[in-house]
Length: 311
Image 1 (cartoon, rainbow, N blue to C red):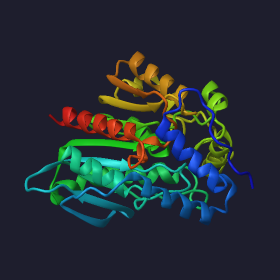
Image 2 (cartoon, rainbow, N blue to C red; image 1 turned 180 degrees about the vertical axis):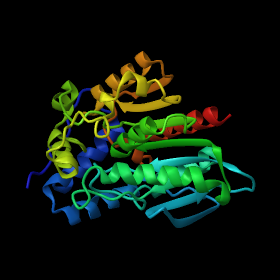
Image 3 (cartoon, rainbow, N blue to C red; image 1 turned 90 degrees about the vertical axis):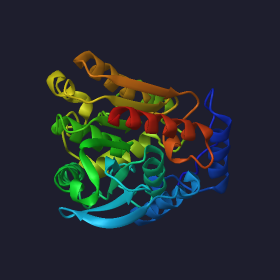
């Protein structure tokens, strides 16, 4: 197994550099060199870097037409807007447990219900299982959330990394449904041909090799330009239906260039897009708010975007 080397990226945020140096000094191998069950356990353990869990009104595990979901309610009475959240993890690791701190923070900060979707993972359930589950859960929310105290007229969808990918795909497939979409360093192009993949895809939490590992678990042999895999290749007519969109990008993220390109294509199609770029930040920084200050700033940006959309 390969032990990651300390990070040497110009402009790397000191807090991020310290975290990555600690991981490198531990001698822990990268996820893609671990047996899959172990990789999933290790990934779930990183949730501890997300800080203390925010207090919310209540939490309940539910079935969204057969798709497991964890529903969060904010404190207080009344009808609440709703955020559908799709976790990251390369379609292969992660779940509602690992995403719990993020879901709680967004529930509390945006004073909204959050439906965190536990979609099926590859390679046991390859593409299009993740897309199908995400869409099924979204359609369940549209039909049923009113009976649970949510406002079906104020829906948003979002996710990080692979979850951002699924969020973009579902948004494109359900035009006119959402008041906003929030894409946190989304994977938008599974061809992996953008320059930042090679330039930045080494010695950090997400590498080029890891992206290839995730992609091959999820969609080996597929057409990687299929818009249900790579929303970057959706038609201009589809992209034109996008709601107001916030894209969060770390400027040292290997997915940076495909984020930039997706923003460009959305804007060219006529969509309203706010692209928030964070200097010195890598992939996954948004989930590390317990140790990286910029993650708190990015979370506040997401909360404000949701509040603005619902206002």
